[in-house]
Length: 367
Image (tube, rainbow, N blue to C red; front, side):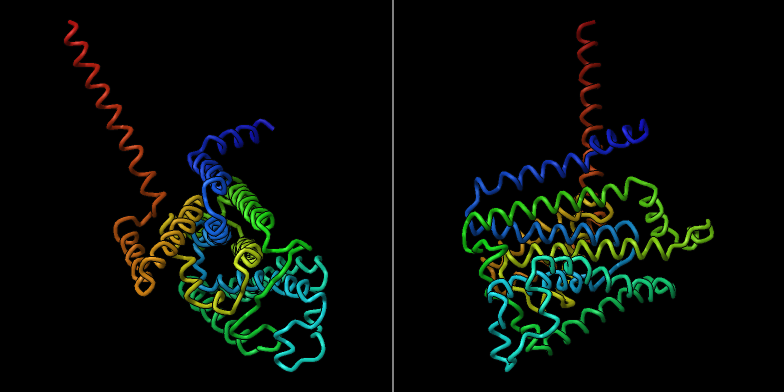
């Protein structure tokens, strides 16, 4: 009990936790100062921040670079979208299926007539990650080979979902949602409720990942990142730990996708593509990987920059994002959070040294 108390005290007084609390307070207060449109946009960024935390857990701490995390995000989003679509259609055949010539609701859609089907938001990404993780980590596929494999997974799912027009909506995806749990999505109250739900999920996700990293399993994950063979020679089986963190990260991505859909109003196969998956990595890299708080900062800042620049320069906004990433890689390899951690102590040291010099001068003047 004493050790747990010391650990909790240490966590609560850590700079990362303090910074996260400040960000959460800012997010909670944001609707008081922003328009409804901006709040809805910020809710979208918060869902991306949830995803980024999960990606930081697997990449920043465990050293597994996944370039196909958009797949898990998309699967969670489609699970939520299918439920919303069935609720909007009153349990009947959705409009896009009628347009595609279907006359009977496909068996795979039947469970989504009930709110209990939202469990698939967790189960589907977890199941896919479990199978893929077992096949790859068991065979010691890692590094760039795993990254290429995850990228290929993204291509496969995008092509599959586009090709199944009658069952997934094809290129257009799922849209035209009307209600969620009986509440009209168009109402301001519903939108604000979704926004604060996203903030609550962000808090839970951060707390879960911070809990992992502050316990023994977190130290093992870092050890795997720094030297997997040494971990194996020490008597640990890296495969089980890597599967655990991969499944956890996939579930977090699925949750992010689920809260993303009702706020944005659409989910399409493009969200599972390679480009979105690489953008997710950029968020974590710019914010600072291996910190958790950096993932939150990076996801919100990069997407805010993307939104602001695209509004003013719609044709060249992608260049701004690319330049920002290059600057971070060249001049801030530890990301924004890493840079702050490096410079703040230096500034404090200089301030203390200057104060000490002033005190010495004052003493001499008195003498």
